[in-house]
Image 1: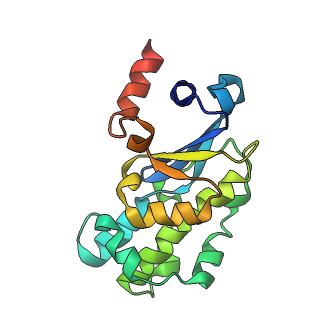
Image 2 (image 1 turned 90 degrees about the horizontal axis):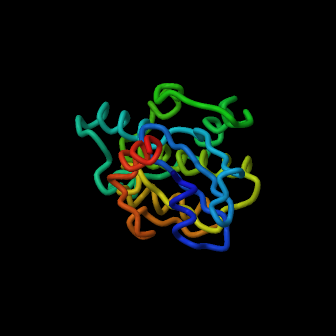
Length: 187
């Protein structure tokens, strides 16, 4: 389905579709949306760790508008340690469960610093995963709930070497993509 959507964009470069749910996953669609060149895999946590952190520390279900992350400081030493997770160096195909990554590394941080570090971790996981793609996408299109987190979208824009758009900016219906995909596959 992502290849069909990419074909509809009529771009002359590869597209990276980034689903930012509890887990983040990538679909790489080569230029022209050729289905034979598709690559897809889970790349790390999406909103899952951030949501879990915010709920544990504040009782709220998410970092609304990325406010906590924007207020906090990224702890680079903790970020580097988290990126040493063996999953990060494993080649695709690979898949995760939302609970495969833990909050332990950030437990000593303030609420805001934890949110900032976990947001940076999600972006860094996507960046590291892009190294497994045949070539760098010319643009990234984000879907899933994470596309509504401005702090996460900013972190992704800094981490990736191409524009990062929310699904709606590409003309896609971000809240409907999963249902549309299942309908497409059924046909």
